[in-house]
Length: 265
Ligand code: GLP
Image (tube, rainbow, N blue to C red):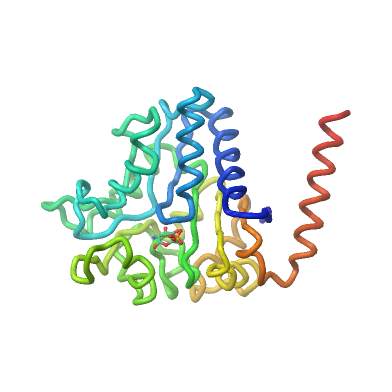
């Protein structure tokens, strides 16, 4: 796990955008796993700006989002499809046909969505880089605590805490869905690399448990300790509860020095 601790959320967004830009320059037809939520918003803005300046193209990119509410139709303003369009898709040169979310059409059996989504990911060759945020309870996607660490894309019931945290996006409590379809934890772990972003003090405890706690279904993000290639971008408030913070900062400095030396040799 590579931990990068940065001053604030804007630096996290810039580092995330740079990471994805490097990936797309090396592999213009990459398959990206994307997340919604407040955390990646500013990174998406920066990616859209890079695309506008022609420093980056999504022409051959395919995306798979982590999750979607069940019972919300793609055109509804609160759907994650609409959110992704507002925050990224409408401002980049991606082919909308290459943007996937685990959506359930009105006439579709919701139980079919998960297996179909897994098959679509496989058909595109798997996810090169999965972007993740983290819930205050340690969830990734909508894999709430107690989700099987071996789970696949399926329907999940949201916790009261998650419903509460996402209430602001809905006009009234009644219209807020309590079910979602989410990539499973094993689906996420299949990605060739993972880019986790966490910002703000409200995430500090979940970050500490994920990075320094035991691997446990009680904190779904802790499974990332078992992944070979994870980059975690944190701002200082999100990193504030890490017991080994000094060590992580020292490692980060050593890496910076080494890369500067290689560049000057
Ligand atoms: C949401 C989403 C997750 C997201 C997380 C954190 O409910 N399902 O994919 O990463 O919770 O959200 P935020 O970035 O708004 O804090």
